[in-house]
Image (cartoon, rainbow, N blue to C red):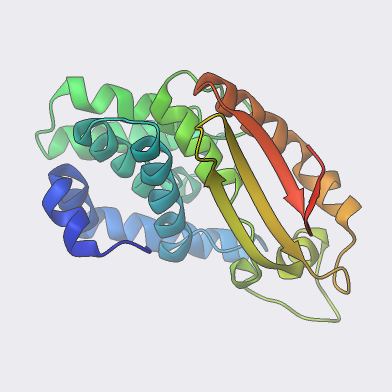
Length: 230
C-alpha cells in the first residue's frame, strides 16, 4: 500500500485486526494458488493491497468517515477469498466466508452487514453498486490492471488476459479536484497488446465502473495513452 501501514493500524482498528488474522491470510494465500493454477492474474496480497489502498482513497476523498473506511478496507482485504471455493460466483461464496470469519471474531452484525454486502457485489458477473463501500470496492478492484499481475508470463504461451495486463506499464485511479469525475489513466505498451484487446476483455468491467462512479455521483473516464476512450 502507498500509505504508511502504521497510519492504517491506528485509524482503522478492524482492518488492522483482519490484516493480522492468520486464518484470513491462509485463505488469501490459498485462493491465489487456485488462480495461478487456472492461469489467472495475481489475486494475492499485492492485489488486495492495491484494492484496499484505492478503496480507502476513493472514500476518503469523497468525505467518508473513518468507520466507513475501516469497513471498506476490511471488505477490500477479504474480497477475493471466495476463489478458494471456485472462481465462479466467488463474490457470493466470499461474502459467506467473510460472514463466518468476522462473526467468529465477534464483530457485530452492524459492521459485518456492509462488509459482506460489498464483497457479494464486487464482481461484474452479478455485482451491483448497492452501497458507497460496494461502489468504491468495484472501482478499486476493476482498475487494478498492471504488468506485475501476470503470474506466468511467457512470450510463447500466454492468453489475451496476460497480454493486456502485461502491456499496462502504469495504472492510476484519480478523482479530480472538483470531485465530479474519477479517471482511470493507463499507459499501455501496444507492442504487447492492442488497445482494442483491453475493451474485448474488460468492457463489462468498465461499464460496471461507470455504474459505481455514478452511485458516488462521479463520472467515470478511461484514459489510455492520454486519449479519453470512455
